[in-house]
Length: 109
Image (cartoon, rainbow, N blue to C red):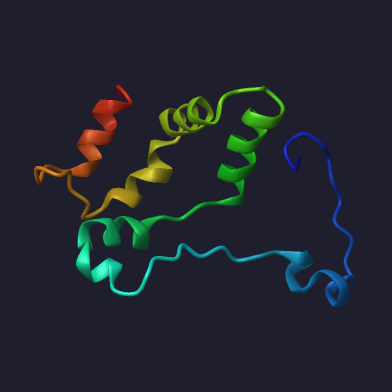
């Protein structure tokens, strides 16, 4: 909605909505021991960072453009490689090849 409408956020609602205009922090959670048992997936989870712009763009494509979720994500990935490439630092494919190159090939970049 933040990309479709010009929204002005009013200050003074911290007691009702929480600090930072009601902003939230999102964490990726895995079961105890998983990251050490699967260090490759653990590296990806540790690297994974979402931005408000990413969320707004992908969700806008789904909600306002009636795009399927997978297509919306793929469209965003193709348009924003510099944003997601760091997610694959130290991540490999099952056969030990660089994860970044595998994803780039899959996306035909």
